[in-house]
Image 1 (cartoon, rainbow, N blue to C red):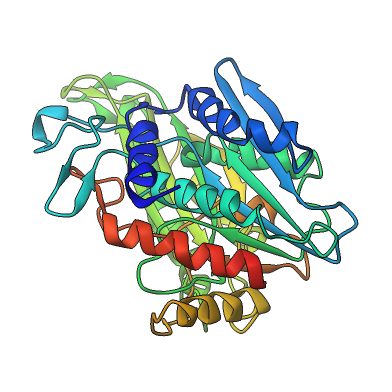
Image 2: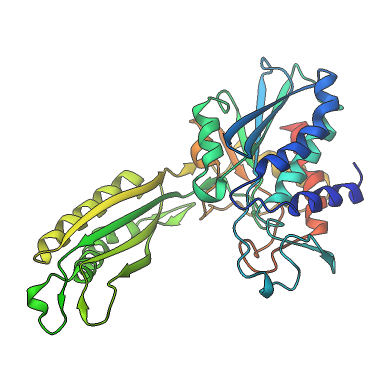
Length: 382
């Protein structure tokens, strides 16, 4: 596939608005392109359904008995584009201007998905199937709760891999680790009353204030710990609502919060801390009861900074005259958080820009095309 065809394929998949739906339309395109290889017996292709119109795709190249096995991961879903009127280039038009390809998912992460897929196809001509197996994963629902990757992990599709390459946009760096995540909700129930006689009610919002103060105290020791690769863990209250009229003491209120964890401040430790904070807040405001719901929890994924996959990426870059890049921890979360297994090499490395999830998201076409070449070298030599 030449450069023009590669860019056209990327445009084609960006033009499919896979906002928590319709990933199967992208899978259709990829499956059609591998069909000749499947028919020739070079590859196998499997679809794993998550929901209507939402299929994960698993493509294998090489023998299950090969001594080296590398997983290649990319997700097909994208986040909502927001107000399309604010975009200079329509979010699903995949327009090209000044060497940049614009569109929702251009950076996060259809450029990495397609660059790795093209490289995967091209090394199929020369790969020794007895010596190496490449497993290409195209997943659904990464942007919400890693739904597809959870399915793959539960179905043991990642078992036996030596390494897992996550083709998310990494900037000019390689990330061999990523933080974990906890999303949770605290709901407060009180008693309504006229605002002129607040003593007759129980203010649910006051319960949330009490919780906010308590949780800040409880998580402070965890946030203070700095991991060498992943830095400090974080805790942020990001949503809050309560009450229905200014002159009524609110009988209900809620907040949601997001935590990013590290090996020094784990999911289990944070969960214990927020439970202690809840108990303190429940004792602090008479007549108000607070309840906790942990909505999502995914552990951090960590691999040594000098693992074989990281080294192989640096070597692959050097093979096409690109310099070495820094190796740093990733602050976000990706499919590796649920797919990585003990002893497995991990590296997040892919094309993109710092516009992920933003208006006028884009990828530099030169970055996209260079990624194809790096991936080809990597797949051949890992």
